[in-house]
Image 1: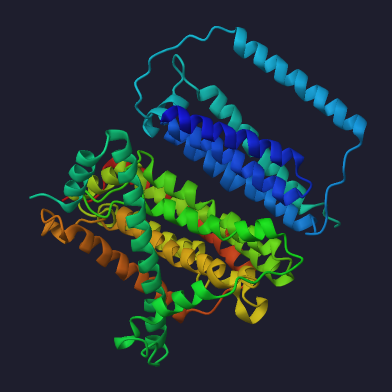
Image 2 (image 1 turned 30 degrees about the vertical axis):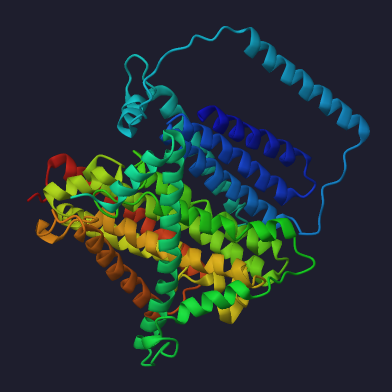
Length: 168
Length: 352
């Protein structure tokens, strides 16, 4: 049962990711990307990583995709289509993605994965919070703080850009 | 005493193999929810019209059935039989897809609530976060509908809605987070368990809880795109806003989703602030069939409050709405969060 659902979700992710790249209408590409991201969220929910699945939905589907849609809505007219790339570009892109695919597959197939029997209990949010703030063994306080500084810098940058130059 | 659900459960498992019975059970529960909320949505529309009539000193719907109780069912039947029109220059794929986003997001969300101790379809451990994550999908439908209709008014309505909903999601999330500080859990059943022993959270958390509730009601009204935040479909300015080009059932999906969303906002408020299915002072907590009645009664009160907002306040301008959120509600909310943290830390909550 679980295996069937895994293959269904995997198929959804792959089909919509491909459709997103192939589409000539930009907003349709964004919607295909949304379905692909929701498929990943479904995989997380299937593995009982509820928190990660909900983050995937809130951040990617609810945040980033809405930003994409906004920028398309602001700059793109409904009748506009993306131009067809030239043949050499298509061939080069195809080669590049084949090489990438080959590299990933060769690593996956040759690497010997260690299987661990983890009890299928979903992680508590409080554990995630403690993990993020602990500075002991396996704590994530440093990356957490570095990312918050990065986000703060991005916010200040956005404010300065949107304010523009003052002509006083 | 045997519940009817238990009887169905035993019957299904006796009839077929375990895997199939489980799947059939899931489908039956989903269908039950779907049927209940389709009808509940229709009656919310009717309630809205009654309250509008009451506020405006009119009679309201009173022709179809006694007191007009079949009015919205007749409307729904009419919508089902209507022709689905579309414009030739619309992006038909997205145009047809858009109505499903709000309705699917709304229907996923209603499965998470605890209507009573046992009537709880999906008790996920991240309850409240799951609700906010799923309901953030709904606005995509509005944006897509506005753009793919190829209509300037629809596009402007969709843009306004997108900006407003994305902004007010912050306030909803933060005000709920303020309350989660007291419960220490996001799971809805545990949030109610905390209130069973210690009193409703709005009493437990006194001042910051009341502030959080007010902010939540303002932001929740904005999330459902209702007056005074109904810029999306400001009829006098924009035609009908993002659903100008929609007809028949496709329009009905948007409309129904809006009313189910109102139910969702009220349900979250009831669960987080007013003790969910618990009765006041625990007088009838043990009687299991009264629990959903209490839940629905509280939801009803909050919905009536939101409907009174709609027929009382005039519409705000988009810049006023964004100023309210970013310059007043958000800083207030952050301060309130810190205040609540201090109160919980010092143990100044009221516990019975």
